[in-house]
Amino acid sequence: MGPLTLGLAMARQSADTVCADASQAHPALRDFLSSAYFPVIQSSSMKKIEAIIRPFKLEDVKIALVTAGIVGMTVTEVRGFGRQKGQVERYRGSEFTVEFLQKLKLEIVVDDDRVDTVINAIQEAARTGEIGDGKIFITSVDSVLRIRTGDRDSSAI
Ligand SMILES: Nc1ncnc2c1ncn2[C@@H]1O[C@H](COP(=O)(O)OP(=O)(O)OP(=O)(O)O)[C@@H](O)[C@H]1O
Ligand SMILES: [Mg+2]
Image 1 (cartoon, rainbow, N blue to C red):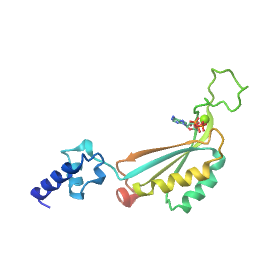
Image 2 (image 1 turned 90 degrees about the horizontal axis):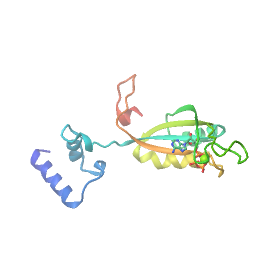
Image 3 (image 1 turned 180 degrees about the vertical axis):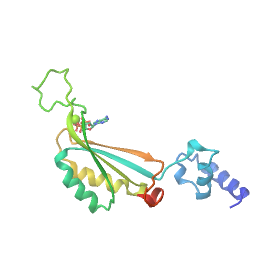
Image 4 (image 1 turned 90 degrees about the vertical axis):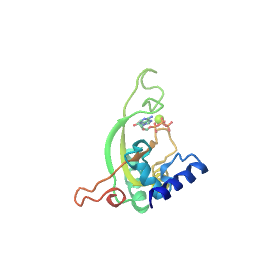
């Protein structure tokens, strides 16, 4: 695709709609937008899913995720609090105390089209229905590199 065709593609694109999500753009346009001229518009096609879960739910969540097809994940022991400030029972502590509770943090990087499957699997397996079941955060990932081979991005997941 030459500069003229690219220019036409861009004109058509901007005439249709303001393209807020660069991943929806024509591939050539996307490459162009990702180039040094438009570093700010660069968009990623991978997401990191960070899930804070109850420690005893790890095995169930792991099985659900492997069944859903994920090929890698990281688990870290963390401590945290949410809206109840770590208070598990009302009579414990004064209303000013904040307690950290033991949780596990899972980190899973997947292609965009796998996100819904993964978060549904986590929610189903980690939920008890009681306060403190945890939370899922989703962020964009710019790049991934497999150290052994040098594979990049989707090929490196
Ligand atoms: N806004 C937040 N930012 C970072 N971590 C959070 C946040 N909210 C919750 N967490 C983490 O998630 C853990 C579990 O949170 P929790 O499930 O209690 O959230 P909640 O919003 O209080 O919901 P619920 O009312 O169901 O308890 C916390 O211990 C903390 O580690
Ligand atoms: Mg809570």
